[in-house]
Amino acid sequence: MKLEYADKSRESLEVVDAVFARDYNESLIHQVVVGYFAGARAGTKAQRSRGQVRGGGKKPWRQKGTGRARAGSIRNPLWRGGGVIHAARPRNHAVKVNRKMYRAAMAGIFSELLRQGRLHAFSIPEIEKPKTSDLMHYLGSLGYKDVLIVTAEVNEILTLSSRNIPAVDVCAVSELNPVSLLAFEKVLITAEALKRVEEWLA
Image (cartoon, helix red, strand yellow):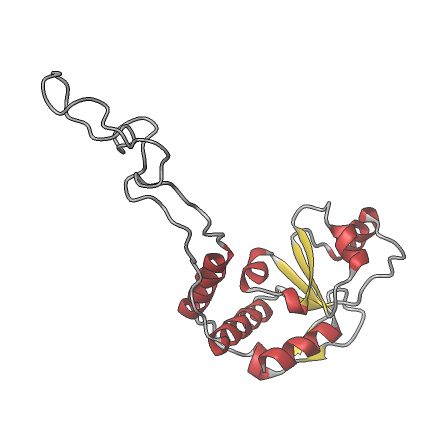
C-alpha cells in the first residue's frame, strides 16, 4: 500500500501491510479506548463514614422519656454533619489491556484512517520560531482545519505554534494513543514518524 503526501509535491510512500492493511476490529478498538479512559481516571474520590467523622461519642439524649426518636450519635448518616452511608474510597479504575491487543487496535485505526483518506504524509514546514500564523497559513494551504500532526520526536516549535489553534494538535510517536487518532478529521505524519510507527506496530 501507499501513503500519499498531503501537498502532492512528492511521490507517495510505501507502507507495511502488516500495519496499514489490517481489519477494523470495532469491538477490540472499543475495549482499548474504554481502557484508555479508565486509566486516565484519578480515582481519588473519598468520603468519611460514620466511624471517621469527628465527634459523636456521646449519646445526644437519653433513650426513653423525651418524646423524640432514639439517637445514639450526632454523627449518624441521617443527621446533618454525619457520616456517609457506603462512603466512597480511593480506588484504581485501570482496566488491563494486553500489549498485543493495544498494538492490534492501533494498527487497525491507522489502517482505517488510510482507507478513508484521512491519513497523509507531510514534511515539517520551515518555521524558524513558534508562530501561530505561519502554521495556520501552512494548514490553510492544504485545506486542513481539524488535524493531528504526528512527528518522530517532540517538536517544540510546532507544539507552541499549534496550541492556540482550535482542533489542531501536535504529538510525537511516543505520545500517540487511540483517542487522539480517532478524535481528528485528518492525521498528518512525517516520513520518519511513519517508520517508527511501523517498527512499533509491525
